[in-house]
Image 1: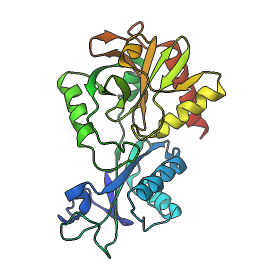
Image 2: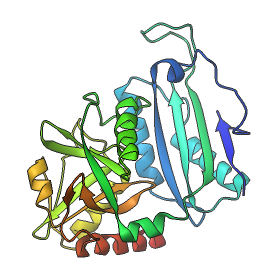
Image 3: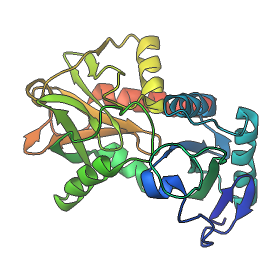
Length: 281
């Protein structure tokens, strides 16, 4: 197995410095990205990732110079050349390189870059035990539904959690819980799953799509409405989801123990269903 990169369809060494200093992704965060899971050498929910990629591109008026099939082919090429079977493939597209100015330059070509590295072998242990989290103010912009490279707000939240010895930051806006710094967030109260609606204040997660589908198929009631920090603190269970996180129990938010302080039965059931979903994909 070997770590590899890809730039506009060409395999490269990840150590090569091939991106222009005037690339707008570097200077403005003017671009979008996706991370797609790979299980046993197979891309998982790639169509949903591509749907969100093209949706993000449309929202920032960026024209992707590749078809969906070409982008899927780039993923397959990285898998073949790297030999990695279980991982996440990172993809980003920037608006391209041009002399620095804020408005969109005319006549430049977007730049696609990708990277593949081995996955985290410790993830299964964490998903059984769960993690403690830190409650923080959500200081991000108002278009969190776009998966852009502008992640400084997320980074500061994640760093605050790291410095506090926590596994994730749970964000809120004026007492209304939104999501994690790099994950979607859910609580379970009296057998009902609650999560923030997929509007401009959260990212429409791909694993979130899977979880809501599994709930519908297995009779777990879902309420997609804003809920407060107070409601969260009284929940029976909580968990986060993300492409590389999968379904991760949350046992504590700041000083508040959630439920029994361990993985809850509905969270565990969803983990089992998700594992089966991966096997059958």
